[in-house]
Image 1: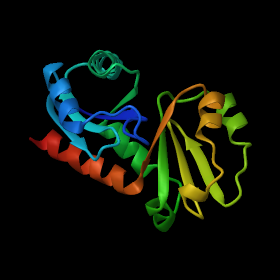
Image 2: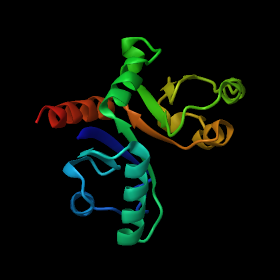
Image 3: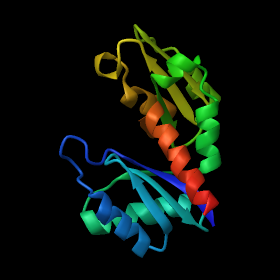
Image 4: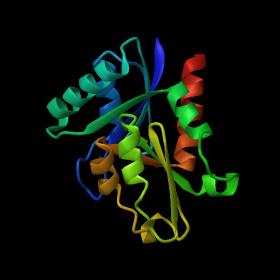
Amino acid sequence: MNTYIILLKGINVGGHKKVPMADLRDLLSKSGFENVQTYIQSGNVVLESSEKANAIENKIHKAILAQFGFEVLVMAKTRQDLQRIFDNSPFSEDKKKASYFLMLHQTPKDDLVKTASKKVYEADEYQIIDDCLYLFCEKGMGKSKFNVNYFERTLNTFATARNYNTMVKLLSLSADSANT
């Protein structure tokens, strides 16, 4: 059994794509996953499975579509993947604590990263390293002009963002799960 962190994109945002966490835990348990835990309402799941990441993503995608009637993009990362992403942040510790981790479903090709990296946003810093775009918004995310859709199109993959505190909590929950 491997411990996975499942990141669902765009659920329970602004009243759209509502997925109650208790229902999601029940659905995933009934789908054969073990030790299913959720964290806050924004689509963070820790679970155990012997399946590979792609199979888990497909299985969860189909289960949510069948149960709730809408499509959700699903990203499965191992605990090791999440730890690597967290540790690879290029920012100082102060900036890291105020930054966002836009995890990419696939590692983009170098030429796409080069093209995407030309985009400049005033008061925002970002760097693309492997399968994560690290973002620090000096004035806060709410006042940023940063455009996730641009990067998804340019990098030819989808992204889902988590802040520092959520990353720390997911690493903690997945460590607990791995030790049981």
